[in-house]
Amino acid sequence: MVAATEDPRLHRALELLGGSIDPEIEQSFSSLEERILAQALENVERAEWRLREIQRLVGERDGVLA
Image: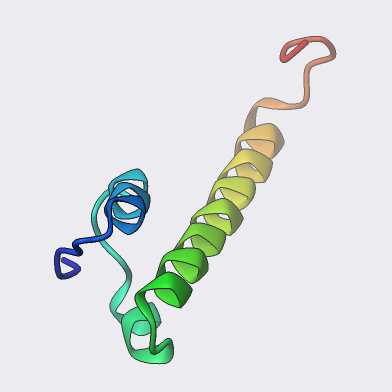
């Protein structure tokens, strides 16, 4: 769990991340802002991978998301 912050914007950004940052990201970046952005990017990459896997498993359906 990430230490609490007094800045309401950073606090809200942490909430949007689910309140935690991967330990590897914690160690790799010095500022909280960098950690938040790196974790957000990691989350997007994971979501894209999961979407590709789901599409592979169930097949792409035309118009399903339209």
